[in-house]
Image 1 (spheres, rainbow, N blue to C red):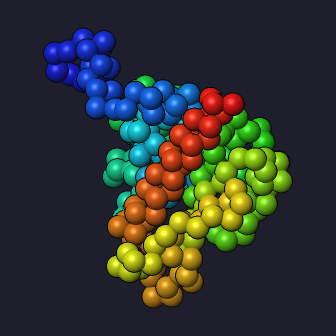
Image 2: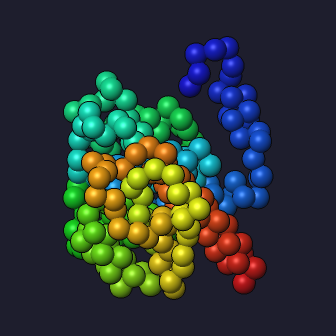
Amino acid sequence: MPSFEMTRQEFERKFFSKRDLKILSILQSSTVGLAGAGGLGSNAAVSLARAGVGTLIIADFDRVEPSDLNRQYYFMEQVGKPKVEALLENLKRISPYSQYQMHNIKIEPSHVAPVFGTADILVEGFDKAEMKQMLVNTWLSLFPQKPIIIASGVAGIGKNEKLHARKAGNLYICGDEETECEECLSPMAPRVGIVANMQANLALELLVKMKSKNSKT
């Protein structure tokens, strides 16, 4: 809670004061899974928490490295910590009104259902193509009715006009879908942040559409 003079109730009221209450109600009753807490996952998680999503389920097995600070939502004093532990600290500082389920594991096919099964939507944030493919195949096999939002093509700088979202059934792809540039040692903060927020923004849109539709049936 803030250190300045304000009651807990007053702070909560002001925290949510500039929200569409209908949309907020939907988001607060929703659960989003995030597979990976790197550049995509950490930034998407922060945006989803700020938006008011009720529960975030986040899984990653890495620790924060100095090189991660160029694009991931961590700080110098968190280097060496497990990413899920460091990200939980940051998310709680941003929004104490969401629930956070953190899993310090490397996601294998056998983990997808027990870890992410209660999520309405899954957001992918893996670095390796084979991990992305495994996650997509497993999720759509287990939960064909639930969307999964992946990223493809986030390296480099500029070329904003090439970034897009594409739908293929319940698979959604954000990015430029081009081969990662060979000269880039790693993706950089601006493009990673844009694509991560495209994923988060699309997740919010889908949640509102899905739950508004269900409430009318």
